[in-house]
Image (tube, rainbow over all chains, first blue to last red):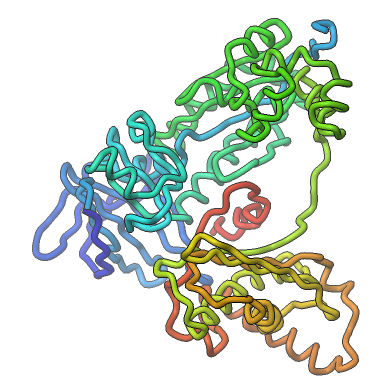
Length: 86
Length: 419
């Protein structure tokens, strides 16, 4: 199932000097914490003059699409998926 | 005949991302990996499948099928809608990798590109090693689930054939030594440019395999099979030489839309036409063109269709001009029926600076300036920030889509995404 959420969420990020990469490490959504086990893909999306960072991340059972606004430093949970047919 | 084969070193490489959209979805979401998934225009049963994953293809699910048919084959098939920005990002990343090897990189579509090594052959003595390195770099720099098939040949046609023959994750080298063997193993439909109708035409003339096609004389192909210069071009291509050197300029700019729910309501349809014209107009203006021709087509729910094109006395530039003329065509439909698909395109393009001015120059310049100002605002604050009144409250209708075929307009995105 793939759900469109579009809700602000809490995110802890990690920055690795080697490779100069920042990525979500842990997220908190609906009073539950999820430890990110993998970043599937990261890309940028331009909307007007703002370039948002989109992170496709997952735990062992759920996948999340997160949107980071570098202007406001805010995070939005855009989609949640369990990888199973709707 | 064999002496006519191009015996030069193969220096053209064709790279094809396997099951592109579906593979990228599986890369982004590891929970989808190894599962039959499809990317479809919509997730509804009637929507068309744009890309099945490798696993779905193995079950017999094909591009162009409806979601409903795929679900009949495999009820647990995962259906996803396309995520155009993500696919564009992958395209730009793989193009960047290819440009490390040659300045001559020709993107053929969102998931295909050609690297021409002819000007840098001294730097890369072994293209098989280069191909293996590119495959590895795509996994390291884009994602471990990204597979591609690579073909190497003396011309673009043979390189493409090589990339087609072994999927997924194949690597095929075709030179004068194994060319005939390759043709003997392939089917006519494996050849780029041969569809079912061409296959039937070739069959009528006794050509049943690529090897038969290769053996046919240039005269026979030119004068009897194709009855045009196309036959001569095929002869040249099949022997490993480049036949189509010419780069064709943009001739038309258009947009199409598959309606989620068929409708004949002129109010709804006029709003959709406005949005199509706005998207088309943005691309037209972005490329610095005006258009004198406009064409519309409609597919109806009853599987019939209608289309019409018109040349206008005055060049069109603003969205309102395009819309007004599109609506003239829309209103010429002989019968009003529920529409399932529709498209609008502009043609007879000219450089905007070469367009003849109207007698009412002031109004014309004012309208153009307003249109340019609205485009500037939309560039800064995002698409559809400023729109004509008729388009209010329809932000999510007509989604961002990836066109099959040319990717010329994506070249500009590289700089716009660089930030």
